[in-house]
Image 1: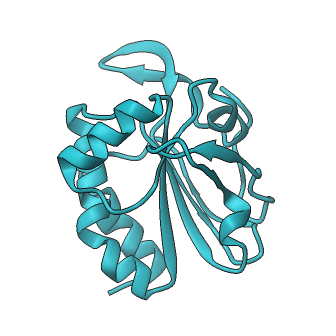
Image 2 (image 1 turned 180 degrees about the vertical axis):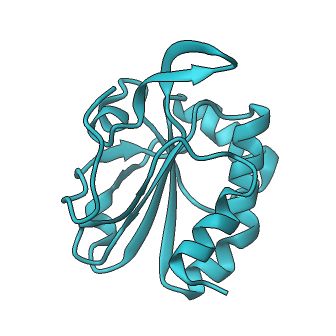
Amino acid sequence: MSTTLEKGASAPSFTLPDESGAPVSLSDFAGRRVIVYFYPAASTPGCTTEACDFRDNLNSLASAGYQVLGVSKDEPEALRRFKDEQGLTFPLLSDPELTVHQAYGAYGEKNSYGRVVTGTIRSTFVVDEDGAVELPLYNVKATGHVAMLRRKLGID
């Protein structure tokens, strides 16, 4: 696995295409808090559950000052379909080369149904207004993740 990020580390900068192919950079949100979450694949059951959970909690996250960005290895066209099918209202970013996944430690060996495989490690990072990692979370569960994140952030 790539090196994991610790609390207080500088969040790796990135620019990735969104579901429409437009470039989105972490620096676009300078001065704001950002939740960057990595998920294995658009339109799969767990990833759909997680994305819809973020969608359903987006207003309260935004009210608390957070912008949500989802990142996967999917191409923009697959992300656009996923976003449209699920009514997602936050940017989905395409990282097919896994450069950003690796920079955040969100790609590597993981246990999948008792087997060790290499792939996306479901992870979430809260980046503060100054670009530092406020909360790194690795190997999160798709179900209940946003509720756990809200508790950790003191939102409710």
